[in-house]
Length: 270
Image (cartoon, rainbow, N blue to C red; front, side, top):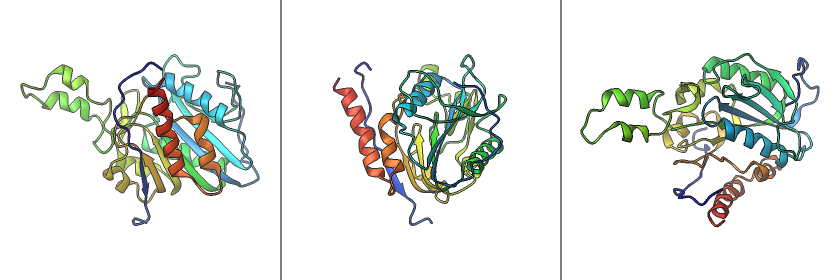
C-alpha cells in the first residue's frame, strides 16, 4: 500500500452493561452438534467496495485455522461482474491460495441485502443451520452512522448556500446509514429490527458507526460493539490476525482493537 494521509482512527469499544468458489451444495440439513461459537460476517459489497470484499474473504481463509467447534460463516452480496454477483453463503475454511475456495453452502437469487426482512431472514437461516452457544456478528459495508438513508441525495436538493457546490457535495460520504446495495441503504432503526438475536458482539467494518446514536439504538442487540467514529480505510480489518481474539474462551476485544491500530501504523511506516 502506498504511503497516504490517514485520519486519526479511534476504535470505540462500547460495553452495553448499563443498557442491558466451489459449487453450491444443497445445504438442507443443519449440523447435529451445537458449536461453541458461530461468527457471522454480513458483507454488503454490491457497490464500489467489491474488490475489497474479495480480498477480505481471502484473508479470512488465510487467518482461519479451522478452529475446533467454532464456525465462521460469510454472507456476501457482490457487485455486477463478480463471479458470482448474486448473494452466497460461505463456510470459511483455511486456505493460503489467492482465491476464494471455501465451500458455498447456500445461494440466493439477486436480492436487496439492505432490505430489513431479507437481512433478518438470512441471519435467522444461518443461525438455524449453525447453532451455537455464542454468536458474533461482523457487519461489513459502507456506513455513515445515524443519518437516515439517502441523505446525500436529499442534500443536493435542499442546500443552496453560495459556499455549497456540487464538488463539496460529492465529497460527502456515500451513505448516511449502514450498507449500500446498489442504491439502497438501511437506517439504523431498521437495522435493529433486522437483527434476530442479541449477539455477544457486533463489529462494524464500516465507516462512522461508532456514534452514541448507533450504540444506543443497538444497545439490546449486542453485549459489545466495536466501531469507528470516523472513516476507516477501505482495506478493512486485518482478518489474517484478528480471529484468535474472537475464538478464545474469553473475548479479547481490547487486544483486537490494538491489533487493528498497530496494523495501520505499520502501513504508515512502510
